Length: 74
Image (cartoon, rainbow, N blue to C red):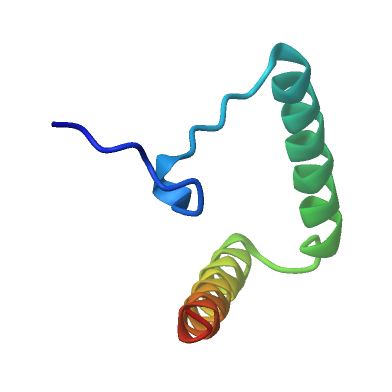
């Protein structure tokens, strides 16, 4: 017997990107890559990669903290 999904359960939602959305996403990705290239222009490849890795770790920590705060509200 299958249960009806709870509309509050984010796992029950499916998001589909439209062609227009896909086009816009690609435009934003190109713009972001150009901005990143400008900002990192004075760094060599190794330093730029290290900075990206560190920023990625910071972003993951911030995401975990955000999720933990949201779950505490439940």
